[in-house]
Amino acid sequence: MKNKIITLVSAICFMLLLSENIFANVRYLRLAYRDDPSTTIVIGWSNDGTSTNAQVYYGDTDLGTAWDTYPNSHGIDTITSYRNLTNNFSRITGLTPNTIYYFVVKDDQGVSARYSFKTITDNPNDSLKFISGGDSRTGAPLIEPSDCRQRRQSGNMLVARIRPNFISFTGDCVFSENIIQVNQFWSDWFQDWTLTYGPDGRIAPVCVTFGNHEVTDDFRLLFDITNSDNHYALSFGGTLLRFYTLKSDENVSACDNAAQLSWFLDDLQTHTGNANEPFWKFVQYHIPMVPHGYYSPNQPQIDCWANNFQQYKIRLAMEGHTHVTKYTWPIIPSTDAGAEKGFIQDTINGTVYIGEGGWGAPLRTLYSPNGWTRDQGSFDAYQVVFVSKYRTEIKTAQFTNVSSVGQLTDSDPAWSLPSGISVWAPANGSTVVLTNPDVSGIETLHKMALNSRVYPNPATNTINIEFNTFTTDKKATVSIYNGMAKHMSSVAISDMSNTTKVNVSDLKSGAYFIYIKYGNTIDCHKIIITH
Image 1 (cartoon, rainbow, N blue to C red):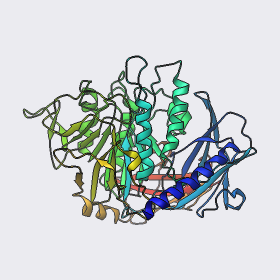
Image 2: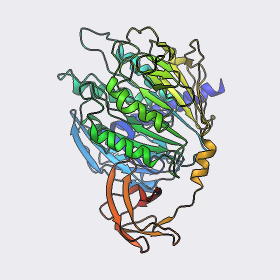
Image 3: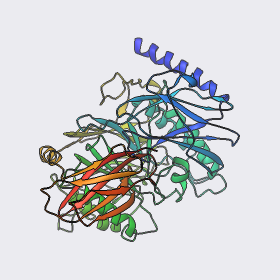
Image 4: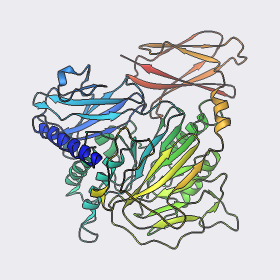
């Protein structure tokens, strides 16, 4: 009873704060990443075009809506006019990992409610909890159910109660083919997204995936992701998790997207067998390898992606598109006699595939399960993924009786689920468990001494690169990537015995990763650029 009273009081207080939004021209707040999740955040919002001189005021102490008492402020970095919305993005850098920040948006028209977010830890010994799901689009007019939006709203309200570190969205926000209503669909989607806010104003950042109902510019102009090609990678928890987002396309073979495939392989190689190796590699994309309903297997993706999943130890793949729910056993691509639809079960080397998108979109009929299908169903749900360096657990949260589900707070254990939540309990158990057999080997790689040094850190205009005197190599290549694994520049070093100066004055403030390759070695340095 005490917890219910606290939750009710918190909700009432936050609703009172929300009423202040009528004085500030701020709506549809959403958080995303275009850089290191431990030290940066993108705060986005929309207005009707009349907001002036907007600033984000923030700090690690809750000062309510007293904007002038917050120690930090940041203006708008970019504005887009898209989908009949004026979208403002403030790119906050220099944050402290694993820290709660409180913020308001103030413009000449007033002050918003007070909201908060929590930066991701940079310690791989900590754990994470995130939600993976997608396909929240409303139904196609006249041919599909009309209750999709209400079911999407139920899923959004459940997000607020689960309180994840971030959300992995596997594509298809809205039904964009309806060119007459698509702008309204996006406004409705953002309005419904406010239901994911916690009763105390907590907002979870979202990592978006390109789906077949998105168009190229949707996520760049509505969420400020840095890569217009809609593929990127992020590191969560330092070396805990390397998280890939790939673009899948019904009309273009995965093999034909040469730029994405080259980038993907390069990043996998850079993070395998050296001190950059994470404890886990996960991937999200929209169109499934082998759909469990409605669609046919996607052989080009199996040919061009799945073998790389096996080789580079991607243990979890999150898919969408079909509007059903599934878990597979760990599987690898195979043409052996025992293979089914291009895959065979392999407990040691395999990837577990989950999802297929049920965040409110019209549900579909299931096919008969494959031999390597662990469990499948057709209902509204998404997955909750818990990650530590030793173990990953996956549960499926169903959108039933959401109003009766309890509310988690920051004081609850990291891997908690709220009381009263409906967790799918299929024949093979309610929890998928992945254990990491490589922990000790990866820890050994992390302890390897680097032969290079990069300074100063933070840097403003120039960084210096030096090598230890016992290094026998003579030449090296320096590659600079931003926090989403986008290549920014490269420099060739012809003489490693000298200090090399690299100009970084054209890089925007934020976190960057310096990869130095010489011989068979790749050193990685994380630096902060400030201007």
